[in-house]
Every structure is written in structure tokens, then in C-alpha cells.
Length: 119
Image 1 (cartoon, helix red, strand yellow):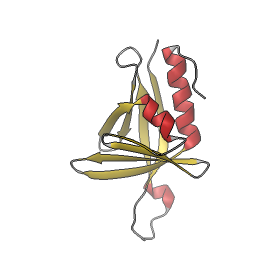
Image 2: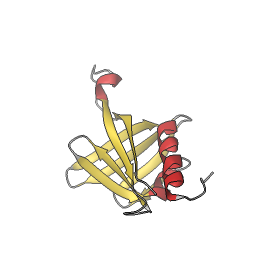
Image 3: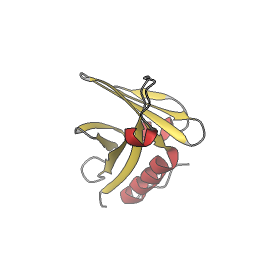
Image 4: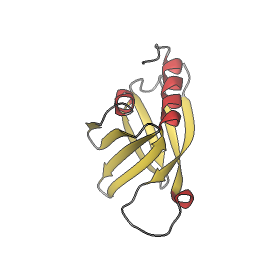
């Protein structure tokens, strides 16, 4: 079993109506999973560095319907996007991903762990 690391671009979601285009608000996010260290958890690292660790099943369920666990909320946003909301003592980070990047990451985690891919 080997660790899975994947990088994805995500968009910071804000409620400000400024003229900043979406590409400049895109941020790189590191997605990590290590079945030897913690087979149930995934790690999301945003620039800063800010890292959240949560159950892999939360991510999988959140791609289909809104779910919350502790400081993390995940929900689908239309057919091609997913939103992750991270809470900390410093505030809230709301990040939007293309669902296919998260699905690809999940598939790789199940392969690395030697478990069947969930449907």
C-alpha cells in the first residue's frame, strides 16, 4: 500500500462582488491519503498552510448530498462541482472543486488501500 498525493485547483468562494476574475482566485490544493498511517482519513492542504483531516467517507458522501462532520461540510454544487467548507478558529474557508478531480482522488485512495471502489 502506498500513499496517494494529488494536486488540484480549487476556487475560493466569496460573497464579495469585486472585479477579480476566477482564475486569480484559483488556489492549489494538496489532497493526501496514506493507508498505512491512517486508512480512514484524507488530508486537504490549502495555501497558508492550512490543513484539514477528515474521514474519507465524508468526501464520498458529500459528492452526492450535503454532509457535515465536525469542522468540515461537503456538498454537491450542480452536476460538475463540489463545495468544501472548512471551519477553524481563524474563520471559514469555502472552496469549490471540479467533482471529477475529487472522484479521481477517491478512486486512487481505494486502489491504494486495496478496497473495492464505492459506487
